[in-house]
Image (cartoon, rainbow, N blue to C red; front, side, top):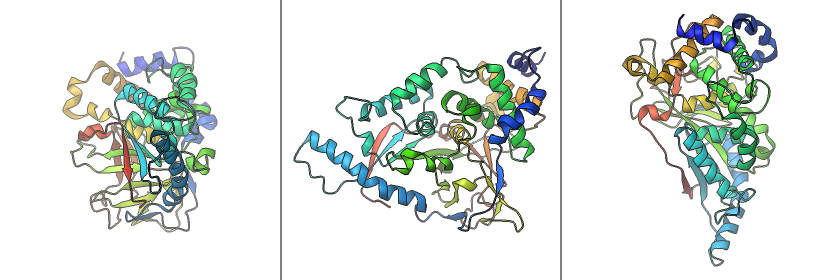
Length: 403
């Protein structure tokens, strides 16, 4: 028996549930919350040149900085009561990648800096942050914080990480495995039926959701743009989140390269895009997935809402399955082959044909004059920054320029 069918049999059981029947039955209950939906387009432009911060981000930081400044001044005065706090910089945390180790290392840093959760000498510095950027598996931590409305690390450790991460991501901890995979199959089936690209990145993201996020079906209804409605965000109590991902040269011929100067994209609650030359553009996050040409939708068509699922974004920053393609696959590890078999099992059961390994989105900058490097591409393929040899160490960054 082929490995992918064997894996499907193990997941769903020989007599318990049929993948195809599961998809049709669960489609209404869970899949519809994952599939993007048509929506009316906004009155404001959807795409703009990367010449300034998004209006929403600028407004957030403008309101956040006085709160962060008060926390930073308080901490500095504890260190030295004579410290001049009349002019303070913007302070940001940059979270690195590196698997579970990155998640736990960054969690320990934040716990130590969080006045709600620590008695350390650096407590209060988390409250002084204006930004929290992260990539790869550091993004797991940043996104799980956001998904749960920025609780303490102690809360996440006790209620999420310890009970759910006992097993690998392939076997979601704390859930009935067969049920979880039936839900995932329903989700990707409905998304594909709506004519959006579905790849192993969607499956990987759904698994991350079951392991990291709250809500039904592994938090399938959570979106990046939806974070703007969370109470700690609307009260400007938390650092502004930025999740980064790398643009790859993925194509149907197996080209999976990402050169060292590959385009760096970022996801925020307000926008997706890149400051890099060759893109130099951003699209409103809420309308990611819309079919655009030169920044507008075709006459008579509608925009898309709900493509920016939180788990999809989390997968985009940490998706390294591109290592499976081309000559790299010949030396793939047993885990990599198992992951490939998992994709085949689910996608074949759903009747979806794809060879793409990265997270794929309809290109919002197609035909846009500023985005010279990607203007002719129908889709963008996104993966882990490690694919282009990028890395970031956990670090505190300061800036004196609010813009």
